[in-house]
Structure formats: C-alpha cells, structure tokens
Amino acid sequence: MSDIVQIFDTTLRDGEQVPGCKLDMEQKLVIAERLDLLGVNIIEAGFPVSSPGDFKSVEAIAKLVKNATVCGLTRAVRKDIEVAAEALKYAKMPRIHTGIGTSDSHIKYKFNSNRDAIIERAVAAVSYAKTFVEDVEFYAEDAGRTDNEFLARVCEAVIKAGATVLNIPDTTGYCLPDEYGAKMKYLRENVKGIDKAILSCHCHNDLGLATANSIAGVLNGARQIECTINGIGERAGNTSLEEVVMILRQHPDLNLDTTINSKLLYDTSQMVSRKMGMMVQPNKAIVGANAFAHSSGIHQDGVIKNRETYEIIDPADVGVTESSIVLTARSGRAALAYRAKIVGYELTKTQLDLVYEEFLKYADSRKEVKDDDIHQIIEASHIDIQS
Ligand code: KIV
Ligand code: ZN
Image (tube, rainbow, N blue to C red; front, side, top):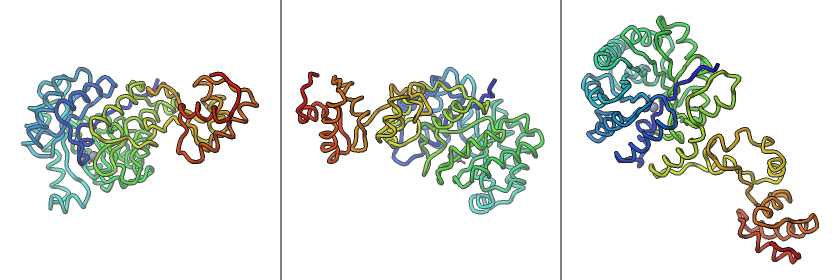
C-alpha cells in the first residue's frame, strides 16, 4: 500500500499572486469547487487580512467546500490570525497557516530582529492560532536559505506549541534537490516530536527546480506538497500540481501516491488558464498542448506502431483524448498514411510514395500540415483515388 502524500493547493493564494491574474470571487468559487472535485486535500483559499475581498472569498470558499480542508494564510500577527479564524469559521475542516521568516536575511532585513525573538514570535503565533482551530500549519519562510540547526530549533518549538504541519518553503527557489531533500532528512532526524507533525514541501521555481525539489522532499520524509495548477505563482511560479501528481503515479515503486483524480487534470488546467487569462506554455509537462504531440518521423512511426515507444503516460489518464500526430516537413510516410486514413484516404504503397513527394514540397513552406491540406495535396499528386 502506498503512503498518501497530501496535496495542498495554493492556486488561490500563492498562485493568485501572479501580476495581472486577479480573480473575482465568482471565479475563485468555481476554481475551489473544481479543486475539491479533483481530490486535493487542502485548499489554501487566500490571505484573509490582506483585503476585504480576500476575506469574503475565503469565507465563501469555507462555506462551499465539501471535502477538503480550507486554509487561510496569516503572518505571525495576532490580528491576521483573528481575521483568518473569522473567515474560516464555516469550514468543515479549517486550517490556519501562520509563520515568519527564519533565514538570516529575513531576520535582519525584514524584522530587524534576532533568532531568539523570531522563535518567540513563531511560538506565540502558533499558540494563538491553536485557540481558534485544532489544525495549525507553521511556515518557516525562506527555510531554503535557513541553516538547518536553527530551522530544527524553530520546528521543535512550534511543534511543542501545537503545530500540526511544518511547512519548509524554498521561498526563493534557491535549493538544489539534494540540498532540499537533505534538509527534510535533517529535520526528520533532529527535531524532537517530529512524529506529531507532517513535513510539507513548498517550492518556488526560480531555477526551474520546484518539482524536483518537492519530489526530493517527499523522498526524504515530507508527506505534503504545496503546489498550484499549471505551476502558476510569484515570479517563475510554484511547484506544478499536475507534475508532482503524475510523477508519483508513474513511479509506483516509490510507494507514494495522492488522492487526485488525474483524469480531471487537463480540464482543470484549461479552466484555470482561462479564468486567470494566463496561457499554458505548449511544452508544459502533462498539460501543455504539445505534451502528447509527436512531430518527427522517427517518433511518429514508433507511436503509430505502439504508443509506449515514446509515451510514458496514457493521455487518457490525464484527461487528454488522444496523442496527436502532427504533420510537418519532418514527418515520414507512416504519419502521412495515418492522417490520410483518418480523413478518408486508404493509400497503397505506390500512391503513398507519390503523395509523400507532394507532401514534402507543401510541408517545406509551412509550420504544420493540417487535415484540410491533405485533400489539396492528394489532388495535386494526380493519383486515382476516391476519398
Ligand atoms: O513561499 C513562501 O515562503 C510562502 C509562504 C508565505 C508560505 O508562500
Ligand atoms: Zn510561496
């Protein structure tokens, strides 16, 4: 039996911090309902103290969501915690996510403080949040650049204060996978009482390592991943939900899985992309337009013979109807015959040779040859064929 890694979706909080991607309340509710259906375990609905609009959205999501825990972000500030508790009061399973920066740079420049005072504030925030809800997650902001010994002291102190989840954010996307994995391992081995809390990965993608770091985290004992649909988020974004879910699903040997209904991934990605007005890059893993498209002759020939030659995921498993064979000047006869058959032409070998010659002339001046163009190419080949 696989261990379940909790999926904490922060599309509506960290994801919505993308410049120009503001969602209105109606849009947030539709996305929250879809995330619940998708099977995420925790929905971070917003940062209630940040604006009256965010407060109302978190409150409405708390009322709406049926299955997932609903979470609100706070700083280690009493007022933030009170407002979050109020916004979450209708949630079936409320969680307050509070925390403070723990790296030397945050302590010095953001708080003009010192390590002992930061631990005091962290403990006070968790203890206060515990007076409102049972489930309190603590984030050690910039944990990626915090030295492990001090991070362990912080974690130990907040577990004693009642934290149920310890979020170890690589806020600046700085860590290498080995380093992030080693951090989790260090905490697991050196924090007293660690068994009382779940370690959580929260990785940013500044160096393109958010997914790799999250996976390194769970391989070293973390059991929650914080992520967003399409990997949207501040700067280069957050860990992409669809990537971590499919990595665990495609590697059953790891004995780690999630509760996500992967067949809804593509549709959810499209929905979030439309609502946020943010296109999904075509080569995006799992949900990009080209994720299951094959355009070179060698690959097309293989996929037509057997999909597994060049595909490690069955497109249907992520809700994509089928792989696509895209005709370009790099396509071979197998792909041309395959698409010609789809549009109604069963070509003999001799006919295919003639049509292929015409096809190459046509394809050389185009990015892609569409199904409609095939009729024109067949006509120009002067072969005697009925479609
Ligand atoms: O990246 C980060 O450190 C965060 C925290 C506020 C959880 O988003
Ligand atoms: Zn973040």
